[in-house]
Length: 258
Image 1 (cartoon, rainbow, N blue to C red):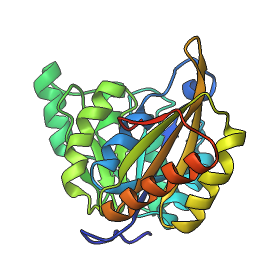
Image 2: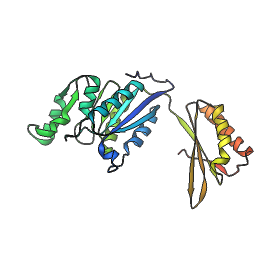
Image 3: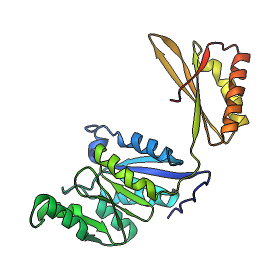
Image 4: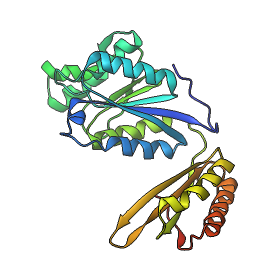
């Protein structure tokens, strides 16, 4: 299992495992990945990998084991509802080699909400692996759970975002990434490639990316510089402006980060 880095460490990495046939079929558009990436970023955690797997037990187990061994944290979404194809809890328990049990607090929550004894498919949502802890659900329905370095959250975006708020305080984050964006208009990537590459080589610890745009107002690229050292970021930004100017690029300006 990955070992979370301590507060202030330069790099803490996480992965997301999206579970569900409906995502792979295209019937449902995933937005959870975007929201998780942004949320982790505020805690100084890099989202290093994302996988999407179908509702197949063996596939979920294999992906989860690979990710939890490689990264500090893994967040899963989907597959914790009441139907037969909601098998995430089963897969997580199998991956950790433990049994599932019905958590009494979840049963009590369900009984209070729906009245009387909880029966049938709803009891499936009360199961968590032995050794796991609950992740609060402030929106509606049963909570998620966490075990080891894995956080198991709902697939419904609104509910997932609510659960994230209980995940955040449990994370040991790193240094938050900061960014600056230089917008270059009227020049293609062929012109800016060499200056961008030169600055990237001079600052190997930073991330420099080119994101082209094209529309009725013209074309160009947004050049995004990301790093954890503010002084180095400012230095690299100035070097990039100078390198582009030397290459004959004139129409550029800093914009809010994208």
